[in-house]
Image (tube, rainbow, N blue to C red):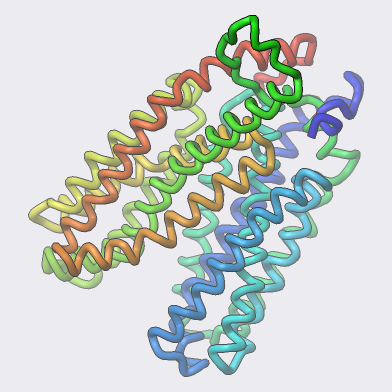
Length: 435
């Protein structure tokens, strides 16, 4: 990355209109990711019936999506370091639509699992690549716009699930997912040139400040540390911080997975809500999260990262306690909505901080931990529901939201250290604050 940071001259640095176009193009890729994934999710019941899979067999097949994503995330971080985040994003933008057309072509659970392994790899790859590119673009823009990208992902997911619900009764999975493939490839083909033309990836990197380095504690003069040892220690500290930010992402994703899988059941089983009302549990959460992310840039500019994470974690904690322990379905839905508002910007901030510290490798590590939280959450909720009760189990989401707030407060010095370093490296760089 140091070489990439040195590419380009003052004359080749992107202007404000260039950066606006790049931001719009990258936003489209985030929306495309959510749209494609949601299109697959709504057809899972039909694929289950088509392959004749039992519930347990389908569960094992779906694990292939997770396995492919987790394995690929680390590899994608390395590819981004070598080839650049934007070219990898475009490549995955081709693979993801192609891979979503494969599940309806299978006729057995085993073949479905292999196909989903490929789909998961494409999904994990584009998640890391586009977040890495977004971290670079946020740095070039000098504005905390990371939540807006994740808002586009949420909007794409809502569009994909809504469209899937409309066509599910009229189209089989094959023409539906093939249609998503065509749309996805068309969107990628129309948007990719804006990212790739004129060396856009290098120009973003050239206009971005160097990776911030935290000041090391003072040492006794007698130790005479070597430069190599100093770098090793800094690397270890950076890795530790990246894992901390990944833990924040895990706490957020844990809640999202838990509410998606168990929220409707809680309303129907424990609060005796109508199935239609129970189905609105995740919709309320997702809509509130989307609204929160659309407001994220304004919140970050006014409050800063630390206050946004701490305030969001505290809000989510209170909201989830209401959602889990409320005596009525209406209050529970309000609690889920408040939880969505609180969690909305924590994951984007955690990924952006990890990327600012360690580049694509940091994004890959934080994303992998976050994705792990989404996978681990629903099974843990199930076990705790058997041991205690479902409302009690759901309070674990509130606990982890509180943990994320505490970690955000404990790492507040990393935010304070960044501006001075960033200022030193961006002295003389053209202003783009109006973007």
